Image 1 (cartoon, rainbow, N blue to C red):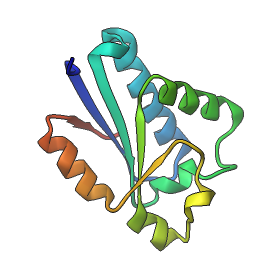
Image 2: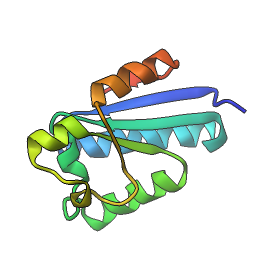
Image 3: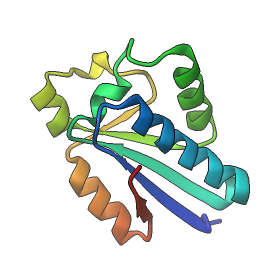
Image 4: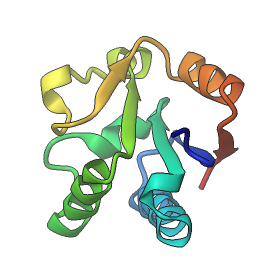
Length: 119
């Protein structure tokens, strides 16, 4: 069954406040419509990938990310941004997916009917 709601959350800053807002947006939608009724993805580009580096998340944020991942939320990180920031794949937390281009992923997802939001 196809998800009734499709949400794309764009994170392009290395900001705990923006990350918290993005995670809350994902939680809130899933809470209101139910896990089976929504497909939620977060795309991290520009400076956003820094927020998902090992050691950058405190225990609370890491717990929230893990819980969202267990609920099927996908976390995409732009390889172009990683390269420009000097981030290697092994520098990122487990569970994130590296894509060739964050902006390309955003365009693809919007073409698939995802609603775009940016905290």
